[in-house]
Length: 274
Image (cartoon, rainbow, N blue to C red; front, side, top):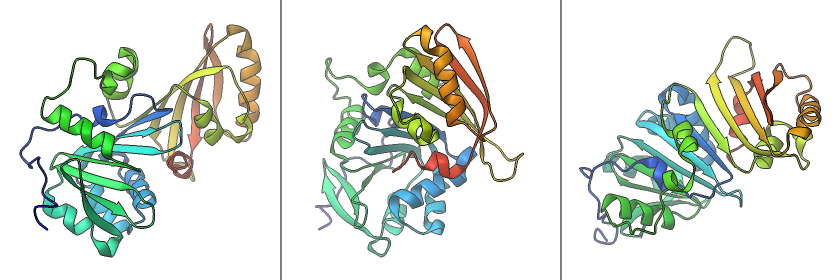
């Protein structure tokens, strides 16, 4: 049985960039500096893993950065870096907590009995989760063991250099969001926008906030449009969607709208994670 659940990687293997394990065709990407957003991460782990808050906190305390991809199908991928010794996995991912161990792509992985999510901790530096972790595990192996072929693209090569920098460099305490397929995002943030819009991409900086009771984040949204002639109409539609929500909307480019001081509750951000 020990051989079945052995892992070809070791805790001493060089860390793999967690960002690169995500698919390159997602509808939405979210970068989360964990310790600056620990409560959000704890709640997200609870929501995904259906585990107790105390166990979720123990996992959060050991993470540094988390990256989330929501695929066009609505399925989620999560990849994080941190310090997760093997002994910790066996405690947090126990059968008592609903997890069952198995083996896939040379790694031990755990399946949650209620959600069906699969979670893998291939080394002490990496952890990733998805409905099916096969592709992420294969990607991990190829990066960790320098087995990438010339025609295989990592996420950093599948998206533009500017988008890569936005999501992966100069990270502060803010959560950074990018959506090349923004209808999903707009529908979750503004229910009134569940219609076809000329918005082609959305960028957001999500800052922790505590000045107004009941709100957890101050968000800056930048929306790029396909046609400059639709800016005014889209602004009007946004105002309908933002009815009753404190924010400032302005045109910041020929075909660009920026929303600042958009105050949101943690539940609204967590709603992106199904």
